[in-house]
Image (cartoon, rainbow, N blue to C red; front, top):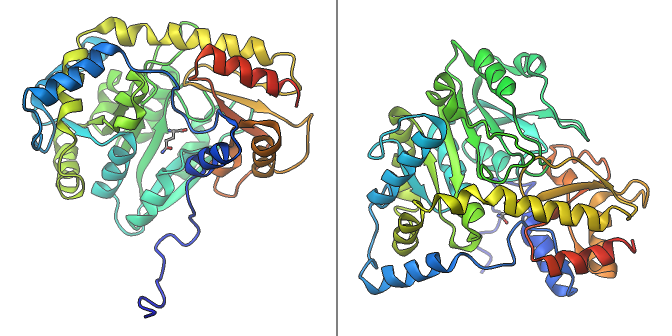
Length: 384
Ligand code: GLN
């Protein structure tokens, strides 16, 4: 049997994601895994208890396609309270199987053959393949290390009749930069009078430091009108493995989103939704998150300050970029492989987030870890 004999791959250049690859390598070599972004600590006990309670009280069948309504109502209340943006939980919120699914669904629901989508590289690795599967073309705007700032005049030059979408991500993975109100105003300015749809990936909305305020597109009515806003409970509640997130979008966009969502995942696991509904009113849990992660960021900074790595600024997310240019001139992928294998710490090479694998000798560490883990990792990092 040699059928199918010649699969014509839809994604010929794509292998297994760097997150899966590096986590597997870390495991194989028993290295401390600061590569794939996930906490090594537990969610709040109220949340795990709420899941058990939900399971025992009968929430074991399909959740509604768009998500458990009380949870969508709580999300609408939260969005209104935080960003003064009134949204309709019936028609403008959908619960998804994590941020990645929400992004994929949003792209698939509006992108057609030959539509162009502007991305900012380093760009999260799921964006471009999703665009390509929809028949669209990713158009990269390369952000330069170590500032990774956007010059909107140059972004405007990329816009043409074919531009269907712009994807932004703030706080930004992997750079840890945050878009300002000025950035948002510029985005508004260059999209006014166009049909450009925005995906605003805001999964790290509550992990933002040094008094910087998260500028959700939802604060800007003209941007909110054209945006899919992506969010993730995994990042906020230390539950990346539960794979629950949500999308907020105006009704006309959300109608298209749900047409795809219903035939892709149909609905998301019910017990987690019921549990998140219970925990969402606990504002302290998300309002304290910045301080919680700031402590980890600062601890990690201090612990690797004396190493030969050069630390970049980290305004948000639980990722720290560092340059290893004083240590080695290997390519970043080679460097992280060797680090994992021989030095016992795994990280993510940043070149994988650029279209042509632009390599600035920069790698990403995840600091969403217990202090003990960070301490052990830092000891190893300081020996490199
Ligand atoms: N968002 C996570 C990261 O950047 C990875 C998620 C995944 O592995 N799909 O590390």
